[in-house]
Image 1 (cartoon, rainbow, N blue to C red):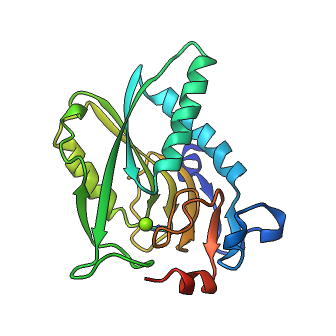
Image 2 (image 1 turned 180 degrees about the vertical axis):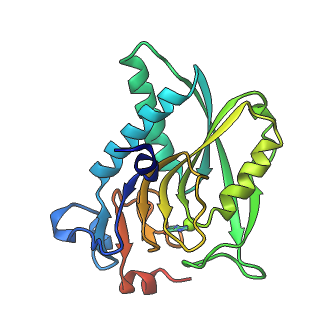
Image 3 (image 1 turned 30 degrees about the vertical axis):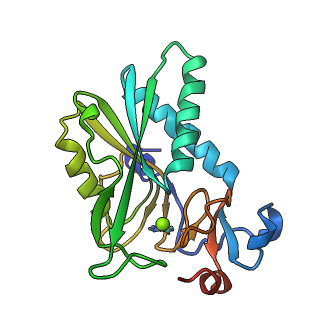
Length: 225
Ligand code: HPA
Ligand code: MG
């Protein structure tokens, strides 16, 4: 496979219906709230392990992992764990320090909620990222779509003069104004669907689902705010 194809990650085509719920296990209380298992947990895990290899190859002996909460927490935990295991099983050990950042996006004049697109970036929690100075930084984010949020975050991170910054996105959405080349490590390129699970939420629900799933009409209604 050539580099360009590898860079896109695992490409999920527009017509991918996902797997029937009956084929996998999931919390019983979500039975009516999801339509299909879009990406099973095992597939996610193996892809994350592969991304850990890429990170090991590209970074020197230490990195600061900047985890974007809340959606990025599962991806971050699993990625860092794979990096540690790889380090134990090879002659290269990548020392990782993990830091967290929380972003809130607002629609202009209205709170961001449901599955509305996001507009303005606000960094909440630790705004002072001066510990990034001179460091090799890996931003770990669950979803990148238009890249608006990521662009704003990168700009903010750059002001602290890190040595280098790379971005890992578990999912990149194919949207009209897709941000090309913003994400260095892509898990999966997916169609422009709203997905939940593996720490991705719909109004704080579904973070406890291990698979990435497509929410049902019932689910959308039930957890609407
Ligand atoms: N799911 C959950 N949160 C999100 C998504 C999504 O598809 N896109 C942007 N934030
Ligand atoms: Mg959310």
